[in-house]
Image (tube, rainbow, N blue to C red; front, side):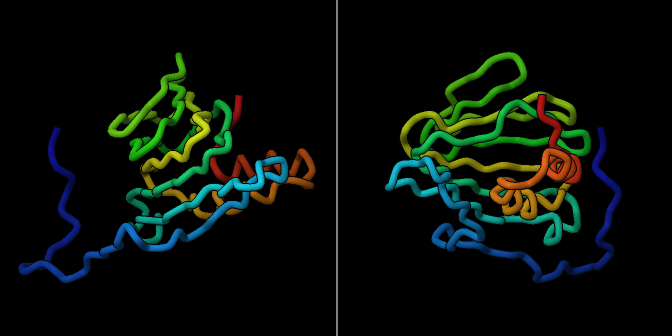
Length: 168
């Protein structure tokens, strides 16, 4: 295996890095479901590196989930891999064969086409990094999935197809 072909041909490098402090406010907060407890916090998404900012190389997101049970059911992607790195709390991860209780420092890589799911069932907040490669406009997915109520089955299926999410 070798390194990719060069894409930068300058001689001295550039000043073009992006810094984001941990204290930065989330880019999007999904409101808790209507049946959630009164103190539910919803899910906060931090758009660390988007497809746009990386030129399509990858997308990296910090996802902070409140204590209420949440997360998608088993699905796969046809165009991108997905990785999960648990920062804090306990997140249940499904690797296509079994569910595991993942905690700080645990990691799951899901190749293209791999069945997977994740859920916070701990009753406590949990935080993780999600990496999609190559990048895809997941911001539209994160924000749009909260508006699926009231859509027809056909419109809902179209939303998931557009966002490379195939549920089983």
